[in-house]
Image 1 (cartoon, protein in one colour):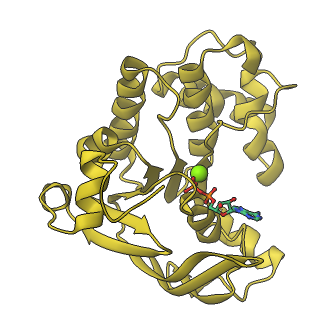
Image 2: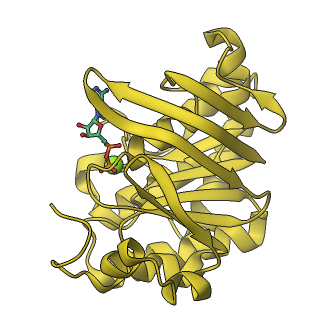
Image 3: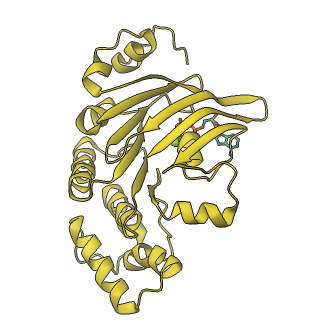
Length: 247
Ligand SMILES: Nc1ncnc2c1ncn2[C@@H]1O[C@H](COP(=O)(O)OP(=O)(O)O)[C@@H](O)[C@H]1O
Ligand SMILES: [Mg+2]
């Protein structure tokens, strides 16, 4: 579904991505692990065409998106749903308007059709009776759910998650995990999940890659990943201070 080849990205002197290669398989959940500040969000933004690489290819469904202009990128972006790290809800809009936003912006659906679709999507995520609430009245977990509802409302083919459980307590984290799993089973969407949480990876990944020094240094199924002999992967999984990775 997505194939990235020889991707390079620097900000001024700082090299963030350096000859990165990865394939994202259709209908599967790919988890990308890595340290804080290593370039996970930067990678995700490239996949959606929100950042341009210095060099490299990003094929989405057979189309290299790197040379595309904004107009053509917008067409490609219709395939994507994105749940940002902070859910990125509009603070001045209530839940209903937040979730309805993509439909109002990008479709010609009627008010009635939009209302039905928003309610159906909220209900499918276990969200009832909160349409009128403002984002600042919601808990962290609820905000993520609403963010997921907004990401799903346009029936995307690919869902991107930037640290969906970071900053949540373990139980709320588990509920978001369950929701991601259920969404995957119900909709068979291709998912890319960026996280530094091993537990999330173990519970929902079909494939897992680790980003380090600008590259994907390991890419395999979770059971193989856990058993990896790579010293970087081992240090990350075990959370050891001592090892090849220094902070
Ligand atoms: N737009 C930007 N301009 C300059 N530097 C950036 C920009 N976006 C990210 N960076 C830098 O790139 C590095 C990787 O960032 P990021 O992808 O956000 O890390 P993380 O893996 O925690 O998501 C960081 O050092 C960050 O400061
Ligand atoms: Mg990030």
